[in-house]
Amino acid sequence: MSRARLAVVLCAAFLAATSVATAQDARQNKPGEFDFYVLSLSWSPSFCEAGAERGRSSRATEQQCGERPYSFVVHGLWPQYERGFPEFCQHPSPRLDRNIVSSMLDLMPGRRLVYHEWDRHGSCSGLSPRAFFDTVRRARAVVKIPPEFLDLKAPLTVTPQSVEEAFIAANPGLTRNGIAIGCDNRRLREVRICLSRDLAFKECDEIDRRACRREQLVVPPVRPGRDTSAEN
Image (cartoon, rainbow, N blue to C red; front, side, top):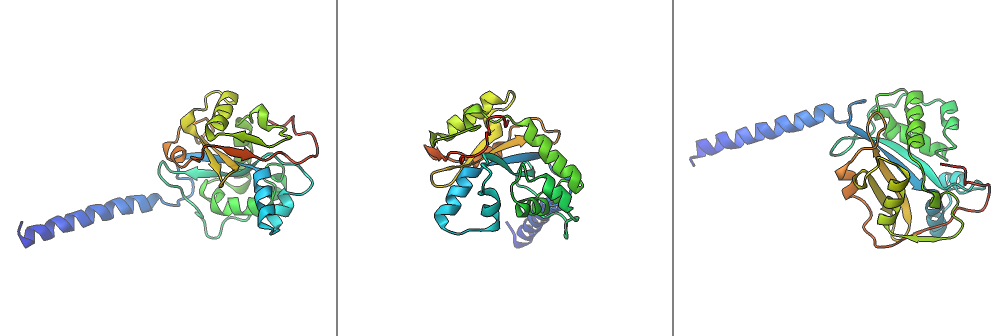
């Protein structure tokens, strides 16, 4: 191939690559332009146990690991692309009213968590703050927590597969490719469930591929306190 021909080929390749990148960038981080949601449910006892092991207290641990015995709490509702995800879509993010923050503390036990989730993820939803957190609440209501996790009084040893199976059994329409288990080096950390924009269960291969691959996990018990068996 002559140098002139090679230069033409390389130029065409560069322009094609630039065109693809531009198409991606045109959508990247545009509020309201995404494909589906991921609802992340964090197992609060694991968060509190890990914090105690680190020996460092923070506002987040104080708020979540105090007297109230949380089990699964909402970490966030995250807009997603089929590949990748948007974040911090508005600078600055629209103001988040303190009354909205207070109204979410039953599901998301930490004011800083609520503010952070709005700035990083909610601002990408294309919704107002109130509409976004109403959507978070509706998304949480879609998912039923398996009975074995409602009032766990002793440590439980599980496999990631068994946790998936429990959620699938409790939630008709949820499939193995629509849920992913998160873990640290030994504990169940979170459950991520994919939902369509209208909050129906959805398969999401990219999320599923990033799931925990450990053979066994420990699920720390819910701290003693009020009865949690009515939560679902």
